Image (cartoon, rainbow over all chains, first blue to last red; front, side, top):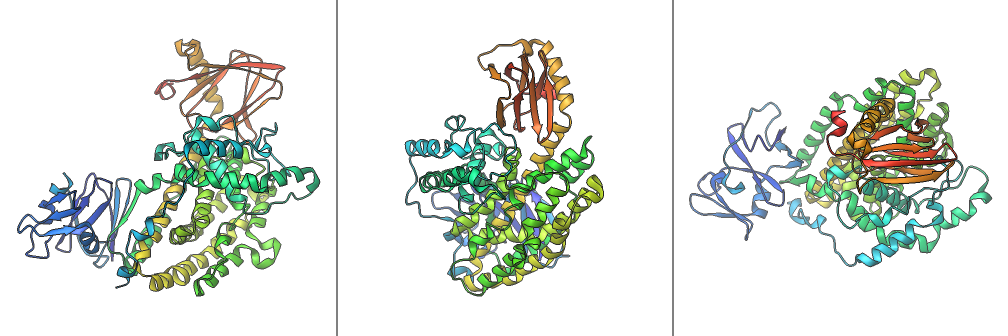
Amino acid sequence: MRVVSFDTQEVNYLIVASEPYFVLRERDGQSLVTHDRCPHRGGPLHLGMWDSKTRSLRCPWHGTAFTHMALSRRAVPSVRTGAWLTVVLPVSPDSPVELSKRQVLANG
Amino acid sequence: MNRERVQEGQLSQPHKAWMVDKEGLKRALKAYSTNPTFANHGNLVSVGNPYRRALRPQDIPNFSFDVPLARGEFSSSSALAAQRMLLNIYEGDFLFLPPKGFSATAKDFIQFYCGPHRSAGESVRPVLEQHVFSFLDSEIDVSGAWSEEAMVSFFDARFRAAEQSSSAVGAAILSAARPTEAARTFLIQLASDFLTEASAMARYVPGNFGQVQSELFKILIDEYGYGVHQTKHSTMFEAALDSVGLSSHVHAYWQFYLSSSLALSNYFHFVTRNKEHFFRYLGALYYTESTLVHVTRQQSRMLRVVFGDQIDTRYFDEHTHIDRHHGRMVIENLIKPLVRRCGEGIIPQIVRGFEEFRILQDMADEDLVAQLHWSDRREQYKEMAGKIIAGEIGKGRSAATQTLTERSGELSVTHVHDCDELIVVESGVLELLTGYDQSVRLSTGEGIVIPRHRLHGSIVDSEECRYRIVPLPAGVVCAS
């Protein structure tokens, strides 16, 4: 497994061995690092909208909704300490990881 | 899947059956803090009486203990008061006896352990715990689907980073103008915990939780030297203190403990006293046992540089050796078997405890470095005060300025302020204490700047002393 740490003010998007992940931040400070592809047809979940009432994320392509619990089950293990996030990625330690910042609509 | 047996979140939602109300809290705090054994007995060091632990009860009503502290208030006046009370409450579970002369301390013995006193302490304990530790809830967030492999990868990455770091505290001691003073201050901070070492761990000896219980007990018997008193870890630490001329009596230097040092000790009490935090405890235990291999090696080396052959470093050298085993025992014989038995849902709690203690240790190191820096440069802070006294601020008599008159020998129990302050002696002589055996003598017209959150006390060294305390606006100390 590969462990990566970064400042969430500078990074919210990861490409790990060609697989995309993004950081979803909730208002209470909780964060999840979840796969960016919708399991339905591969829609970009980082462009989905967050519904705070139902605590769910809606895919921008076909409207599939994912509850916080469902997203948690898909999320990679992570630890946020202040603004820093450490994630444990399901790849070998020498796998390439690209870190960047993108607009994540669900984060507002 | 194991994760579905114990879902994340179930472990972090306590049942809130009862909590003392505001009025009840006030009454209980008053009852607890005004115990005569916690009064100002006029001694800076309490040798031979483990029950005398000055609390400054006059300050207690000024604090809002029902409001959680933010990370930046970790060393505040309220934090210090709460941490002092908490350690006393937790240590009411443990037995202390003076090395000799019990009859002279018998009254304090009863007052420290008596039922009504402990009952008052128990009713304020949850509030104080929330006050000082709940900032960790917003500071740390563990999420995602954890597996045993992910947990081990995370721990290993943290250890690799820790092994590459050097000790900021060690560097501060070695670069101090008075390194022996600084090293003694460091040893005094360790004494807050090491003289009762593994007492918190012993709270997990009773009960019935299978093979893991016996594995934990094996670590405990190492800590207790297998019943051979000379090899008990706390006995080895006593030898280290004795070798450099410090008292090895329990909490002799109570007044010189920083709140951040007390927090390290209290955190382990917090997660062992409250059994719902067992998994957090295991994470914190794994962090400390594993990093101590590297840390105690550095500490032993630093202490030998400072004290030469005089210092007995067996305590530190023993940990460099045995904690290599303890780290392995915690992960292989406690954590992994428990994850397999209770499910991966417990991993976030284990990781959280690991991370919480790592943060608390970093914060305590920062706080100690700041204290060492200030005390080592106390003459410079006296000079800085001279410049401020000559200016407008020094002459100021705003509503916030306090003037105190104290008699010969009067001790102000150590404390901290929540803003930078200037002390100006108007008449008489004041010995301003910046640490154990560390002070500045201030005569009429002289003063010192005390940065916020720096621990200090004072003793009047003239028939009478009149002095002024002037809060300084933010930025004055930096600019000076």
